[in-house]
Image 1: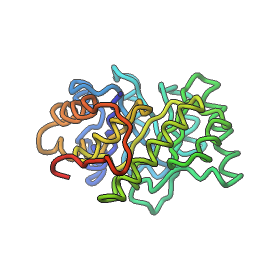
Image 2 (image 1 turned 60 degrees about the vertical axis):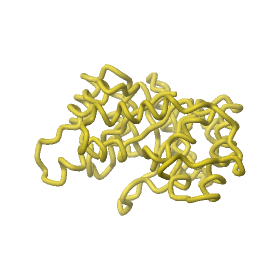
Image 3 (image 1 turned 90 degrees about the vertical axis):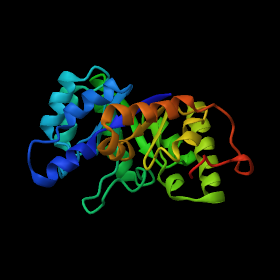
Length: 255
């Protein structure tokens, strides 16, 4: 299990005052020292947090791998092809959303064509491509057909659910991860994961990578980035692999 730390919200604090601190690239260094396996940044079309400069400097300084999240905006796609991060994750974007609200809509033919062109272009320059999707079998099949290397399962519904409903969402993620692996896709997961809810997802046997940002950055304000990443890493890597059914799911202490 790999832990990728999303540093977007360090930039969110900086952009609140339109100044030069805190620097997300410095936060990335501390995340690596805390044991992060990789770094994730989302360069949005509206540049609400991460800026082009952040991505360029991060690519020059990161000692781990960089996962760049992006929509299919032409200028951002062009920059991604220029910088060639180890991985690009294509995500949906809406200007009015606070954060990404769900997976890519692959039922729409226009979306599929746009994504297919982006996947082809990124892979042509050697960038590994992941698609951020809801845990739905038909969507996973479409991802394979588009030529993606990996999928990132949207865990937002799991994070919002409670009690038995969360158990059902966990089972949904488990089945989607198994189907993704069967289709030959690497399976990642992320969105809304916290120190309180991450362990059951980290225990899913077919998930190999988690992307976590807000919860880590929030804790880092109180205890520091290195410690916050180290604590999350301990939870993620300590999760035992097991098949989880709704009737056997037990929430962690403090849930």
